[in-house]
Length: 171
Image 1: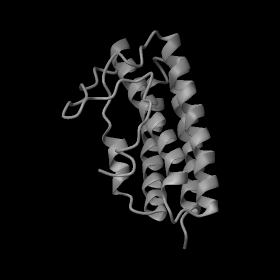
Image 2: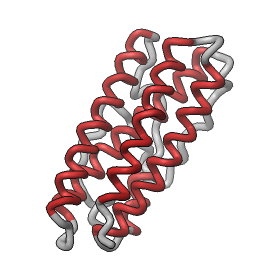
Image 3: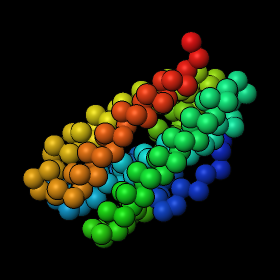
Image 4: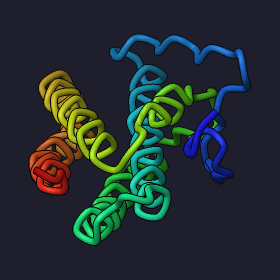
């Protein structure tokens, strides 16, 4: 186990998978249920990132003040994205806890043995999130422009998050 997987996190309003349980496969994006699955998945990723940045700011002994302040700023940014997604889910009557969500991302943070490894890991995770956001925007812009715009805004802001995460690396 590690500093992240052992942390006591309140995952509400989400329902994480139980140990050994696999998250259900997302349904077709062409259905309201499938859209809900994607919103739930991305919102849970934002929640995990928010909690990871907050925990990392105090968990790594070698964390610099620049890293700490950067990560607390990014935690606030992730919280903003989470609120956008949760609000949209509420508008669409998507229940956050309807389907269990994987903790694989959260548990993968345990691989980070020091602050610099965490900074690099998160810069890469933010890049993957940016790419996914752009793809969701392109897929949804003609069928659900409101949700598409949320994904576009998140992807756009991830560019700055990547820059902040990379600038927190000691060179």
